[in-house]
Image (cartoon, rainbow, N blue to C red; front, side):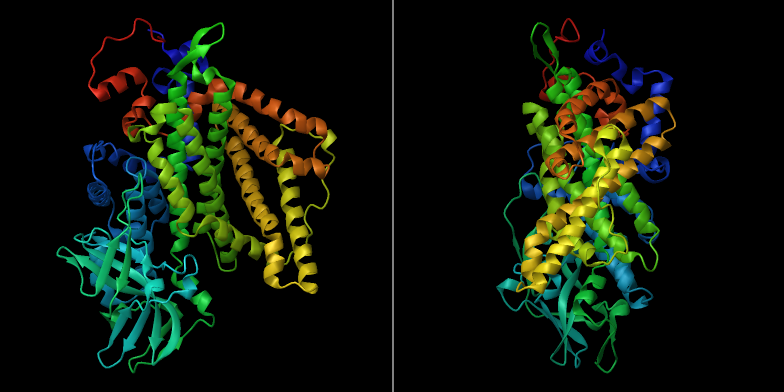
Length: 632
């Protein structure tokens, strides 16, 4: 029986029926996607998802779904190496996020908060302290779930302004943790299921002898198997569609915690006679150092959302190869035969690959950072987080929409990734203020070079070359930076304030920061093309990289035209070139999604199956005869 895929797209046949060279090409792409570390870092995590623990459970109430997510998180924990070893292997931590989210999106924040933010903070700021061994063992065994409780109802991203107080009582050698008013209530830690033992790192304002010493982390027991601890008050927040994490508003009523639970690390010390000696001059710098684990948390969430983007495109492309629709003069054709479907899905595919390579680069830079470049690496992490999560949010929405009614059901996965994407856009630093902060830092940094001040002659350049696309992006980045700096300087020299100057130029500055991320992504994409070891893999990636570059140039084509960086003829030609590339990518589409190391069996998404009609029929319990022909 001839499959729909091979009938209409002969070169896009699946791995199982492919020639050896096609299988080799898929492995080639997988090596690039997983940065050569699939077997050593990812394989066993992927295998763990095949366990029946992750089979669908239909009809669960939100609270039941939340409990199941904690159960699944503990199951994955049981398959991992000891916590102390795990915490030394940050690549492994990133990989846990990338796989844990694919079947149950709520396991991602549970594990990320537990390992990266809670246990990681204690290990970092409690290094060398034997008196914390019991807490570390408790979290290491996951007998208690770790939390980070920072954000307050009235302060959002402004952690330095937190008002929850931890007042030192030297007589009892304890801290008194208290929420002084409604604005200081903690919003929205996962404290809503109160009979699961939970141990938190709580960010609170340290007060010693009446003096404000800034915001520090404190270890606080939130609940045990009998419920909430004395003085801890929790109100569950309303349901979030598609996301079962037990978020709640949490407040503290004069909760007493031992002196040892203060985590000062290298930020200062509280002496035995009750005197605090600070080591960081700025309270804002101090709180940023206290929350240093946020950066690997950002990488983890970003990589996880890109993983969900890969799964979304994988499902959508496979479904589009089979789903038949009317065609003028042809009867029925797979919907992927339509150019509109190709542009939507192949653009999404290009963005997924680009963000994958960008975040692989970010991981490498983070792990190899050294004294003197930490600020630059922090900026790179923030840019990648903002750009990737915005891009993947769009990718997931497009894939859901292009799967029609089937895309609306959780069983086909993509709908569940939509709220996950919105969560990542907001979590670990909301994207817009995060990108704005980086843009301001980029403007403030002095540069000996003015950058690319004039565009190259566009008439002599080829739109389809990566070098020209990179030159355009570099020119835009440099121009926006130079013009925003100049405008802010003129504004502040006049009657304007620094705030008004920034407000007038914030849009251009954030566009500059975004463009830097896009340029870096394209550079990494083109490097991956060069590193591909098979001709099929290299050809497919080269077409996709070109498409990504053209999409970004087209996005700001009016700006380039106004600056004479593109000719009018080139701008008019951009949509036609994009369509032509999609036509050329079509025979490679199955190869490109097979490079993600996903299968229908792993994702348990019926519409991704090789025969989605039978898979959906099996799901609803109908045993009808197979159609007479494969494409009817």
